[in-house]
Length: 230
Image (tube, rainbow, N blue to C red):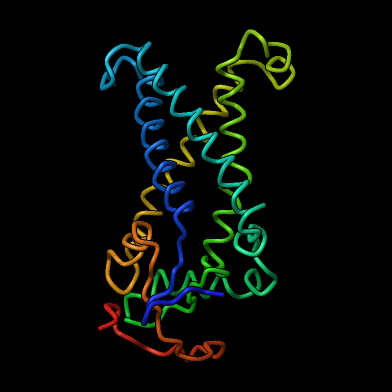
């Protein structure tokens, strides 16, 4: 049962908010330290090369533990992993296109978001598809490749089996670049609420204002409402 407070709904529980900001800080740290490791002749923000490696490995460990806790929470505590992150047939058939249309066109015309988040359905069809790829493919692969790279000697045999150290390092770098590229997109989309800070505030307080439900949109007759929700 969704917890409500006047016109607000409790959307993000404390464990999710802690994980979100811990993960965000960890990924930013990995980005900065990883950039110095990859381009040591041009980037020296963190001092010595050895310091950058140490910070990168520490942040990677924190993010890997954070990811494990996230998986445990949604799978065994909240038990909503599949419902929240796996797109349904309707999502794939029309939901993604409807949401893309909103983000790229109708939002700027002041039309209502076709998706209304609830604790049992936080993410719209496009978010589900993107998060599914990031959380279940890219994050495990970048974490696993990072573990291999920080344990070269004991895992040398496995590294050779997967193609060698150079291939593994290249894969780790490319996966990291894909994750980093998602960050500005994530931040931008987070500003597309009733006001630019609505969704960001939700990740601090847990509460989000409920949007009005304007009816069905199947025949392109979305109900218009001001972007600011005044």
